Length: 356
Ligand SMILES: [Mn+2]
Image (cartoon, rainbow, N blue to C red; front, top):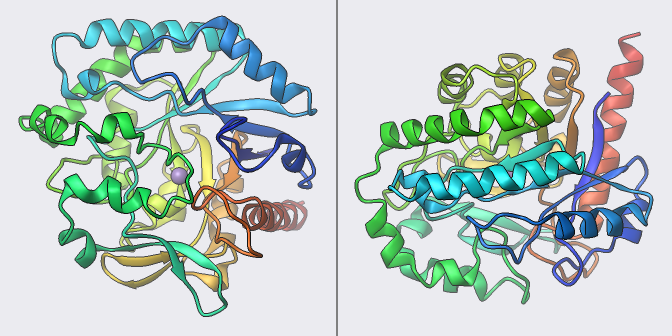
């Protein structure tokens, strides 16, 4: 049985409250993180216990962490990486001791997710995040943060922390000798180092696919397609080494057959982000409501594939539209994600009952 969750960015960061989340039918847990701890620093027991207590006070549980970010030294493979891997292991130990057994992370150089517009107005007046490669090609990577930040509604953009983005030129320089092979190698080195700790505590590592699923700004990207994801699961062939199946990220490339990818990863999908998007042409898409008919992805086929591989981890609706006048972190309002959770729960119930 999968577990429906919602991403929650923490008090003071998120516009959505735990009380609101607990009122969404079927949502039992949240996926959260400790925003103020920079990548590379070890998390403390006190902080993890505090966030657990806060969440549990609302009858919810911490179903997983998204994300424990990876320090650039680990992705680049520079000599100081061992120190940061040691800190990562310390964080895993703290999480494991507190019974948190799911960690989402990504291995993208410099930029996390990328969009050309955070509030594209649709015909019904709702707004969505949108991507257009032609627009991205005209943006100087240096200016990317400013462009996004000006439309962030004043919220922190996950993965686009200003401290990091002020160093963009330096980051590009640091990654200049890292190609796709090197990135795979560095990922393998990292995973091999942490697997014994993951095994000890039963922590499932769930790498997030790159978003969009192709290289941007000339930087290498590897979590793009079925072939590369299978390479990840075989190069470190351990059940704790798995993936976050993000339909929106993988689905940004229409060549990715998501139900087929799901079926090839039985036992290795530890977390699922399920959302829809609408393709216009290669490299040009808008995010959409979760409903299949609102976008280009078949949400029934996706949920059916998850059901068929006996997926039993946390799932969450992903980016929603901004609707009903809600002001939130772009993509992370309450309303459309609650509609998404309810829709996905409905699909699951129908699939389950029809399969009896
Ligand atoms: Mn995702």
